[in-house]
Length: 181
Image (cartoon, rainbow, N blue to C red; front, side, top):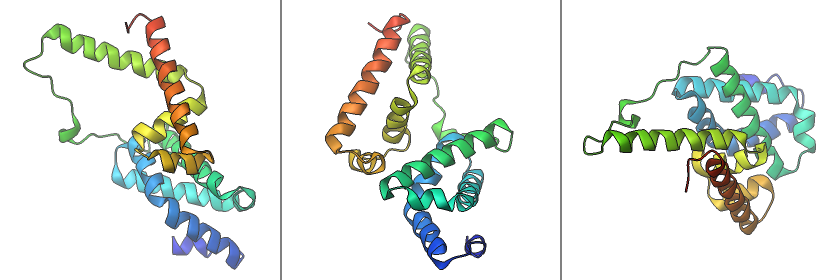
């Protein structure tokens, strides 16, 4: 990272990028890891994102502080998806995270569970980007309501309302497709 900072012209730009890196690195890495499932590739995605952001330093300078975090999280998500699409990442899942079939569960129960998960995924992908983001922040990145509120520049109560609406939308879409009662 130090080498990359030397590419910037002004000390204030270096300070801004250093501060953004220090305050957002772990969240960005978690976001990349949730997509790429590989530690080294996730770190590469974060570094690539910062290189791109250094080229757009003017944009970062004019954004309010809370919007910078959202900008960086969105950018690393897009970088990670690009890496995945281009084959730059080979997703692997640790054996501990693999859902093994419950030997006590009937075949019917396992099929229903699988269909329900697929229905929720389909419904999620049909949501507007803003609702997808709030659900990602909460359940994939495991951010607290306060962290989400800071990232979006809204109150915790507003975050809870956003989450409730997004979950209702998923449930509604599942019901439309006949997967929920």
